[in-house]
Image (cartoon, rainbow, N blue to C red; front, side, top):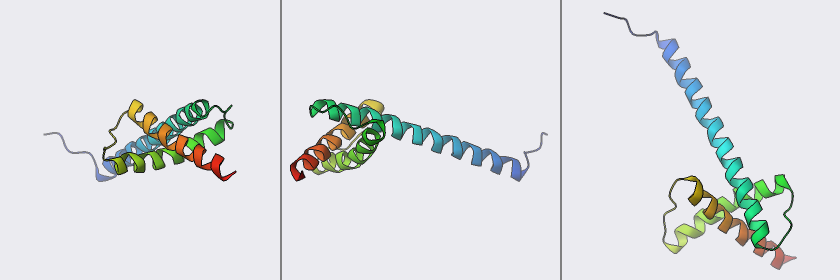
Length: 102
């Protein structure tokens, strides 16, 4: 009978799998934030705020958009398109609030 791999081997494998998953999540957040921030800047008739600010607007917009979507009664679904739409809605709300406060 083949023996099972040593405990340290499986533990190391699980750590590497978790690192890859967290790196993928970070890339996902940056990609969605960049697209949502750029789209919100274009929809709000602005020229954008630069890539880093667009990413920040998109990431914070995703949080705000997720809250607003749940407040209306919908449940945000996973996936690229729904994530971008939700983050864009939140970023538009943030830009509108920032322009009103100016």
